[in-house]
Image 1 (cartoon, rainbow, N blue to C red):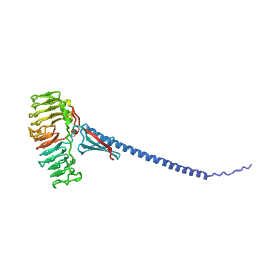
Image 2: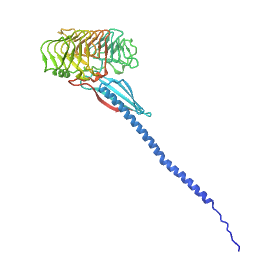
Image 3: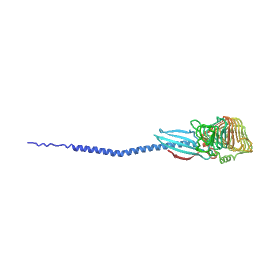
Image 4: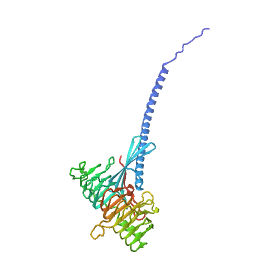
Length: 423
């Protein structure tokens, strides 16, 4: 029997076509997937960048808030501070941008995404001591002494010695700054008056007249002199402090001959301090305050981080080596204030405030009269209508005094004027 074998042919072209279709479909799928994924990747990158930018903004605002908190609560802080958080940083800078005004700039940086916040502060109601020295229209005369801080005068600022130095800035609304060294290397220190002569200024020199004897030419961009500035202590505050002494009145003169604690008292005559005194509340003296050599005047520990008041309507004459002490808490000081207008006509004293050698840390105010500060004095703040400082005195301004608070009456401080992102 004969078998019939037929040859079966395999069609290979169909398989090749299928392979081409699969590869083509694969490329199309990859293209579609790429088209779908690429925007997603871009969006992810953009979202990640936006998150980091947002983190940078939060970081910059945190830096500004931290600086504001420290200023508001009289905490120590330098003019430039770098804060680190989770490997990222913010750089905070504080400058005096005007009278009773500070500007805080904070630059946040998260993986090179930078955002910058700016916070402008103005001094609030109450006692805000913004300068180491502040004078009225009587002006300021300084000998061979140093002011560690800035000076603002509604009169002139002149020196009687080539070595006189103001480490901060000097502003003279009265039109003249003469013969001064102003500023500190590396930190600056500006001068601003209509006329500045015979002076060396580290920072900017704003004036419209000079005699060619300064270390640099006038920058005329600010025009003439700065505006007059208000004094930090208001009559309302003084009246309120006086009212806190109405319940305990001592008629006539009072002499302390042994260590005494006293407060909330009004003395209608003179007050002579011949022994150590601890102030427990405001003391108001209608007559003159005298001190013996070497006495110590303290604030009670109950004051905490506030200032105490020793107030008189008459001249003050402090002898050698009188020392003033706070409560023991940081930011606590005694403010000795006189409303005397001496040396006007009819005054029994040459000056409203006469301070001899080595008086120690205290805040002094004679806003209506003249303060005469002699040699070898260390003070934290001085305000008067006119101020004359002799040789070898040092006044060291403390930034916390711009936020001075008292146990009675309104307190000073920094208020937010504006807060915005600038970059």
